[in-house]
Amino acid sequence: MLTGPFLDRNWMGQNPDYNTSDIVMLGMPFDGTVSYRPGSRFAPEQIRLASWGLEEYSPYFDKELTDVNFHDAGDLEFPLGNTYKTLEQIKNNVEEIYRDGKKVFGIGGEHLVTLPEVQAASKFYKDLAVVHFDAHTDLREEYLGEEMSHSAVIRHISKFVKPENIKQIGIRSGKKEEWDFMAKHNTLCKNFEDLDCLKDKNIFITVDLDCLDTSIMPGTGTPEVGGMTFNQLIDWFKYLRNFNIIGADVVELAPDYDTSGASTAVATKVIRELLMIM
Image (cartoon, rainbow, N blue to C red; front, side, top):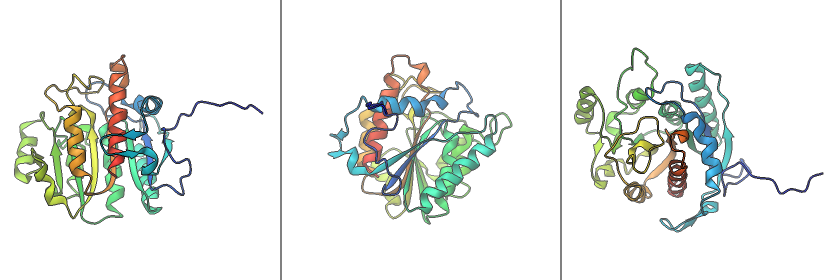
């Protein structure tokens, strides 16, 4: 019998036992509806490997990853070329996580994976709200005739999560109709206090990494200049830590577009800090 030790391909600091964990990390390597540059399907694996370059301790929140008590369940395996089966598979697995009394932490993959996660959460939580970090509105009804698109994910979510319970941060790109939707429903946040109306809600946080400026996050499918800094994103997390967060995800890293590995390192640190507030 080999004595090893062997490399661990799970996230560092995870609880290897699903049953005793409070949060379940779920990899969702899907990018079947991307509108510009594919490649986010490779993010979950690369993020796991990069996690071992981080410390387990967060100086931002004065916590260790072991304090979070999360289990890394690994990556789901999807049927190639079938978007609807993929979404159903995500929904079923996330429902199992909530049924077991745990929270979900998803790693994409493209942003459409958030839709079945929130659908699953809505079965178990009333007064559900979504806090959406992104460069793009993601409020289209369809893209090039395709209803299921990563550019439509928040519009689809708004059909079962009340628009007044959706708050969007970092948005700087979208069609006029999408900006009109945000204005009508007051979804766009510019100040921390804009989130206070969600204090008594059950919140799912979704972070599209292109909310960060391209100088920090070039490795994404749809880079958009003019974004926030990493520290600005952390400040939003700090404000959210006293809210009731029932789930979260981080999506849209496309690691191969940044051969330096810096974008993957940034994504990994974003995940660490988001875990700290759950």
